[in-house]
Length: 526
Image 1 (tube, rainbow, N blue to C red):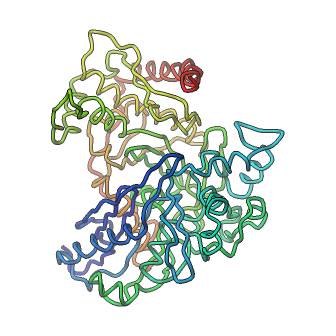
Image 2: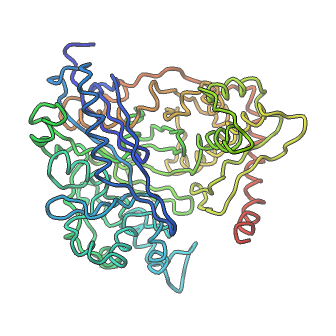
Image 3: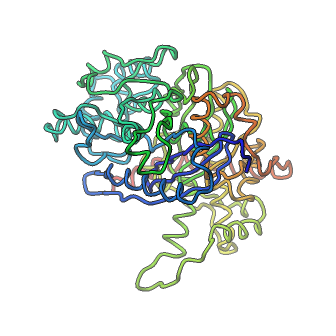
């Protein structure tokens, strides 16, 4: 350990729980502690979490980490949090939450969004004129699903009027955690964006849009002040510093939501440098110097964690989640008839099995739309499957086909992402749990026909990104230096020998979508 190095306490606050890490300002994750948090689901689309349980988990993991004494407290020069995005926490003037947080999975406001999007002329269920106005001002707009914070807030206004009346500010999870750390209320341009209420046409003057607030029926007074993700919100409060074991006066940098932090933590921070995250879901993002929207394929550029930059965002429903489905619902599902215990490190076994099968899986194609899809098509009724299955195949073919099917899906997204930026990616940094698989990295290189750079400690991209954001905000690192700090475990180049088979199967993958989309819709209806 470099005695001159400085460190950031990076809080990675996701839906599953709180991970607190100590990360050097150059991106080395020294250690981390995780604690899960309950998810409260109920009929009607309810999905909530208790902010008090968030805070308890953050305090517990931080204290455990600090008590290890791996890094002297005097070397921890800042705190930065990255949280789950698109959630809502109503707080009163004293900063107390008035109800459970309504998180990104909650769809109770869907009926309000359907009502909001009513009109004579509609496109894909959206009011054409409202949609055009939203896209012009914000680059996108609230979905009909009810998952966006504005849907949460309108649901609270309509169904819980006393909570709405007593709300001083509606906060994102990101900004609620910062309130607990500092006692101060603010939102970053990045965290607030998914409310679809900010005018981002001038990146140097992002502000709330009065016309949009009037259109949806909310008051600007109930929303927080806006700042840059790299701004220092304030020092940690004395009480929190004492409880956690940090020095008084330690600075808290505002930070950014998980997707934005992961983009920074991937090391692909310069314009048009891309990264792919393979977690439960997947995305392919890059920073761009302009505001742009591809509404047809659900791609848009939004404010990034860095001042003056936009971030191309998108997301596909399932990637690594398909392997988890295979593990939990097929191979090791526990019921009265099947008593097998789950094999430790089953993903490593999946890797070995996939390595035994020739590229193309004997023409077996897996489509990973088992929870619908959102990019490059918004088809919630779409369903996945195994296609061209035959008796000459075994589970090894199925496993490799799942690896390849996720890669085909990402290639489908890659086509429109590269059209968006009007150039090919020179390489793609790979992060997320899927990046730990060497065989999957090679499959991505072969299917996408792009060099894949396997980022070291790929599941720590969020925490690493939070640390980089803090380091930039504290003047300890420059944005352009971040890429040089990233360690690359391996680089995988496309194998020309596999080009023909993967091009053929990808073409068939797209044909499967064409014939299955109407069938999936019929089956969902009936």
